[in-house]
Length: 147
View: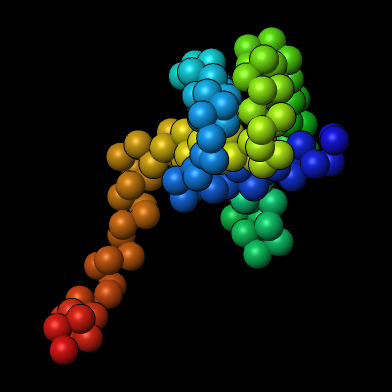
């Protein structure tokens, strides 16, 4: 279960597509997860996602994240997930899992969206994400769509 939970959490947190919540109990579980996150925890999740992406060998050289940074972030997220699943949302998780084996993954898809929203709501991040548009040939792109 530990390995499964790790991979489900990671997939869920990196998902930016809307969660396809299969049934009401899964929706309740997902809502419980999100409802029990405060602003600081959302920022911790966003930082953890960033750290995970920065670990990619093609990107790693652009960050100065230390092993200690990774460990501290992992500890914070581990504690957060443990609290969410064992204290805040245990009944919802159990009910959802009984009716939908994908419930935990789907619940964390919504948590992933919240983490990404935390990142994307910053003006500097939005500027960085959209600055490529200064270098696209919009008329060329539009000409394909008009034909």
